[in-house]
Length: 231
Image (cartoon, rainbow, N blue to C red; front, side, top):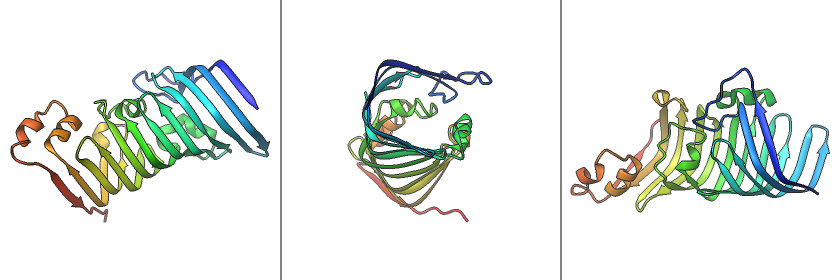
């Protein structure tokens, strides 16, 4: 077994300028790291361990209250299974990891590292998401999520995905997002997707537009389906 108490971790790429608006993989600093590992093994290029507990605070503002999982790290993949990750606002469960050509891929995290996740009975706060994608509005919404995510940040694919927030807002289907994190480059494609919402939830999702006042007398519930495919 291995334990860490009040440890720190720091990594800086001197060739790049720190982006203080989000989590910056080229400039990482975490403190108050407390961890407990068991059943660790190192065979050839593969590290395995059971993380019983991991807590830390990152300089971006992200704070992990607890993380437990089965860890596997190789030269091309880092994966957490049987995962339970809890922050102040979010809870992520089941499976999450990164796939890459080699560790140098993290220098170009947005395009060269592929996310691989399967979420079950999880919820994600826009506050936490904004640490990684600052162009997403931080309107303090919690989104319940189930489904699969695959792809790099600039080319994400969501399959069999269910997301719900507010009182009446739900998305169900498969879709892709290209162009993140640059707001002007974002393109969304959907396949067999269904969406429903109402005037109040729209005002929370898109604040400052007065949508609730404009729409509340004209609709009770919006519901529609989409099937968009690239030629």
